Figure (tube, rainbow, N blue to C red):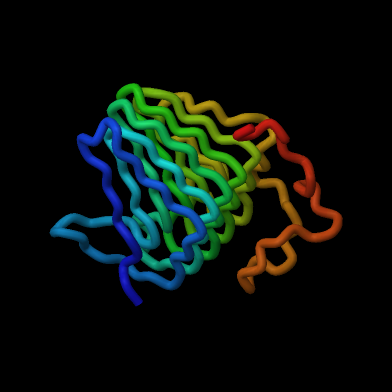
Length: 193
């Protein structure tokens, strides 16, 4: 059991971070270089490009004030985040944020089974958009599975916020959609095309 991964891209206008096909499971809260961090995955960039695809964050435990994953972009950074599962963890599910002129496009996210808010969004500048995503079964201290923490991020209407997607066995970690799920083939097909 570790503290997951913390990855930062700083002052690299032409640099990039590309993450694909990664699992972060059963990690505990940790401290990186003397600073607190979220468990699972903590990713930040203040310039350059970020791509995160097919990331699985499951049963990471950092207490109620940490998220299983966070992706924060600032400066002129641009990020695309897709096909992320954040399930059955303590605290928040997934925290996404932008500031300055940064942009973050996220879609095909599944955030479920957390003891606090599922998907937290903070747009302190730049643009933040979420499409084709499911947030369900989170304890929701804010009253919503998708919690807009700051700003006015663009949360498209095809997202399922608090609507039961009929997972096969979410408590057991099986977040596949059941045969009669309202979410099956229901998203916007132009996402990331």
